[in-house]
Image (cartoon, rainbow, N blue to C red; front, side):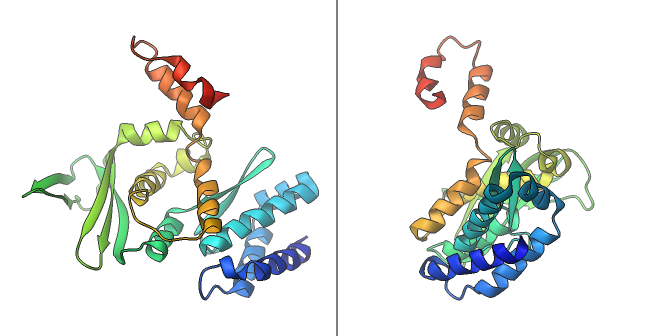
Length: 252
């Protein structure tokens, strides 16, 4: 399977070379992708269970990563099976790489942090200019009460996003993967990825249509429309002004 996939993947990427990032190394990407597949029991089981269709979806997922210049072996993106469907997902590291590569305003640094009980976090507006001040307690293992993400541009400007724990949980409940091992075992990392994703939506980016499609397909699993609507209905069930009919077209 690995040899066949390597041949097919290499051929397709060569055909689509114009849509790949400048300087993209196809041979290294394919080698890393095959190495990931050979070392990933979950993906091997998926391919074995669904045969040619499973291998096809693995190839399509890897192609999406290539359009965005993300390396699977380096943990910049993942292929996650959900039933018969294999989903492509950029990681926290991958989202930072995409922001730095595609932002029209050059980025100096971009990152996300968790705020725990006892940390000093302040959101400040000084002469109309918003900013944040954060000082974490050393080795603080207190409960996480929120997260924030910051993008600092090379010209000195900054933009940031802040989310409370409740806001992160609302996003988690709107995900197809809300009960996944990632959320259950690595909540803080998923929370940082959530606030970073929200920040990235405010950045001006320049990417071609295939890269945009690949990115959108990777984020779809993390904010499922049906789950989001169901949660909003549940949260607003006792509010008189909430109109269920507004969501009929979305659900159907």
